[in-house]
Amino acid sequence: MVTGIIDEIGIERKINELIGEKATEKVTVGQVVKGMVLNGLG
Image 1 (tube, rainbow, N blue to C red):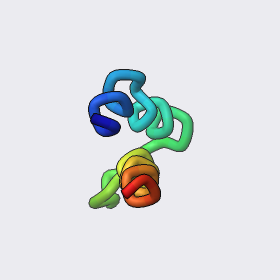
Image 2: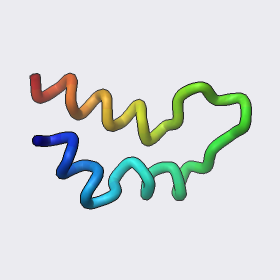
Image 3: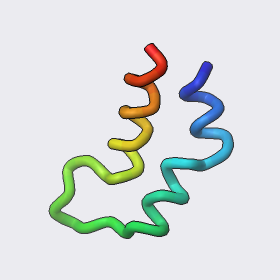
Image 4: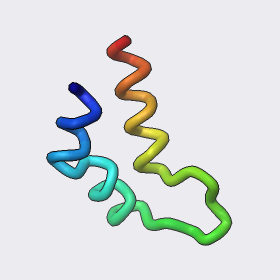
């Protein structure tokens, strides 16, 4: 449920736009933040 809300409002995408992505990254900053939020809630 929370994942759907995070995806719907585009937090991950917005963070990636603000921070930027590098070709060498295996995990984006947006994905890390999303994981931290989900981990903190459960």
